[in-house]
Length: 297
Image (cartoon, rainbow, N blue to C red; front, side, top):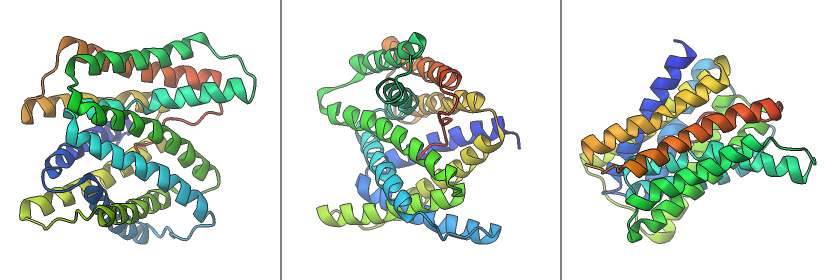
């Protein structure tokens, strides 16, 4: 399977996962969904690594702890956004991670290394945030404010987690091991948070099927994206990854009757354009900067 096809399929799977998360939110809290997503992912990755002969023993446990802490926090916030926002809006806010990453790298280049930054890269970051304003302003109700903030924070933390994934790759950690420990982190954090708030729910056949669907789709999509980034062209992958927003728009209109006003669509288009441009310019100006990796979720 070509890298481009793997990326398209992964984007479709992540969008479908979003549908399952939104439907499961009627039966479970976000923390519970994170727990079961982590449990399913850990079991699948354990079986996958045994089949491929990849050991799960690591020499850098604290790097995995830190990466998982940031990534799982992003995941909890994203699942919270799904329960409060239209499907495509929650997905798009999380896809701001590429713009956030460019902003972090700009700040690092200026403050730490004293490098000059291409004004077009700064412009792409500003355009991304302008897209957020356009997207939220016509469609966001007051009661959805926390969902919007959760979505934005999720994208920002996902960008930090991406940088940590790159650091793990540089010390020789295979992708399967990184995803496995991320799943374990989700399992542990989801269990702790759900127990703390006392929101464990009983299962129905529908609810259990939705939880299993979330875990299987998320893990399968992560593996596809990981492989696509390993063998494909980073800019092509980054561009195709935004198809997840298109799939989410289709799902939202079809399944949830989500409204999309012209300014909302314009904001989404601006965020996608800004993300692609930021990826291209970042690679040109900062050759050692990490590629946009596979989604954290």
